[in-house]
Length: 253
Image (cartoon, rainbow, N blue to C red; front, top):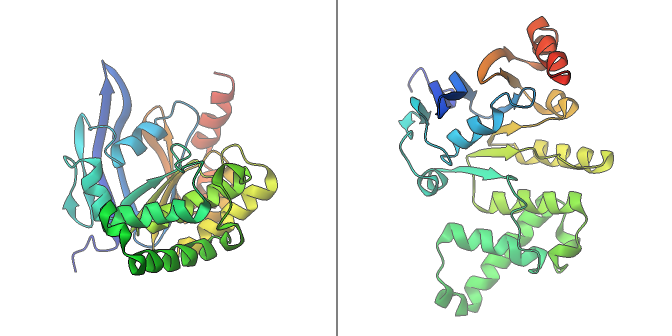
């Protein structure tokens, strides 16, 4: 095993420029296998751009990205998805007029590459339904299996998105603002879900809610003006004067 075996994802000197504006500036990250790693920072810090580089929605101007020791810098989103890097939540990624069960089945079908004629086999459908129910059970949605998705409350919809992400069997889950727009009760439920599904997986998330970050994360990287300002466990990062200044200062920006 290489010395890097502990790290599932590494970026080296990542830079992204937009017409002279440096959105991500020399960012080097190491995400430990099996951990929950949060990317935080004030608005405009470059978190979303950084995430878009990791999921290959954007191509870096300079720098490299390695996943399981393999250079994926030039790979397409579909290629890294096949490797097991799955992003959730950048939009509400469910079909509103399908049932909750059907939504998860679509995710399972995608992973299997099952073509539509294959659907005529009832046995295949039963197998997929059984697996879909297992996933719904994992996110406490089994009682809602036959509910039309559009009728689900917001927090439950987020749980469904986690289930559809799990259907793609991710090794590394990238969660984009998992608790955005949620009431207190829903936040608590989603935090527990993330904790539950993190078993045997690595999770990297962008999250504004610092209570969520403190509760879930093993390691936190703080970005400010596109660069890494601080990194470490929450208790350490929260006391860093530069971090406090970046957050307080940004409130008056």
